[in-house]
Length: 165
Image (cartoon, rainbow, N blue to C red):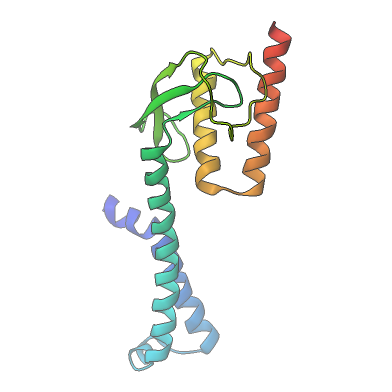
């Protein structure tokens, strides 16, 4: 029974069912007549396919970044490395948590990497995990708002580290 209820709470299933209901109301077509109207079902299937394709694209994008995004400098001169572990204990955006976080010594970074502060180093593990998860969200969504948010977060952390010294 629980699986049946969870099936209908899926956004894709709910969207398809509500779309069918809206089309029935909009065209005043009774349910029995839909068996004969192929064009209406083609419209429903195409829209459902588009919604499903967008959903799968986002899931594949998340999995891609989980596999490839395992190190970053976060605006400082030190590189942090980590591994992703799937978790249900912590609530986060995609269900993955950075684990085994290591700070590498000061290394020569890629020239394309923007460095905000050379003495910038994050020592708080919880803050570092939040940085990593927010950065993952920024990479997956890749919108102007998330990019500006990440930039402001780096500036704020650099300012905070200067105040600490």
